[in-house]
Image 1: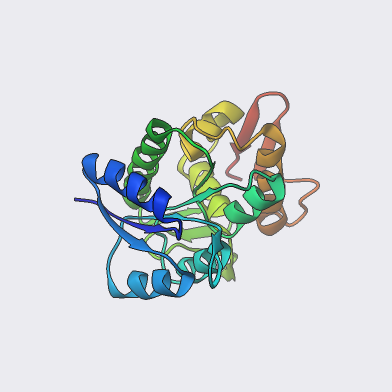
Image 2: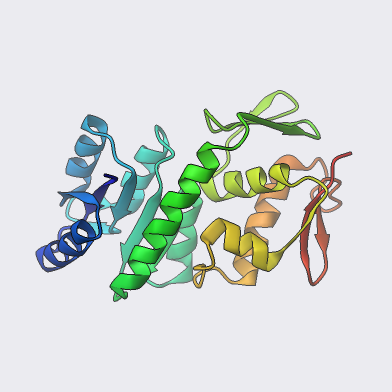
Length: 227
């Protein structure tokens, strides 16, 4: 049985969502504060973290950062904030998805299943991906460029893995969104995807304004070219 740590301090939300998740076959622990969440996470093993942004003793962003420093566990933010800056911040520090309240339970369950499935798929990829001076150790989630370590947020890391798994293949924007967010990326528009591509280029290309590896096919998508 897959285990979920649900970090939320609103009792009315806790009871209802925990009941739904447990009836869907998941084991659910609840933490009501950031400190309790981190303590539980370090003491036990979980398959998914559901994380509210506003907590009595801090923010979900703080929890996410600390968890990401030691784990690649899938993380979904559940929050009332639908501001784009908040969404991008959550994704930048390592969240896999961001769902705004109120949400439909069936949608949440669908996203949980999709993220857990993707997490398993990522764990099955080749242990080492390498091309154009970029090396990825998927077991350790570490990236190097020409032997120098790169620190990539989770979304950029997953994008890079996707490209290196499909060298010299044109990947449409729709396919990328489907693979990265399983078709549920309604919080991710074309502009947001372009931001992540630009940030990734700034880290892996010697001249980001004239990329050699991660090329754009205007109006279609992107291609990782092995040179």
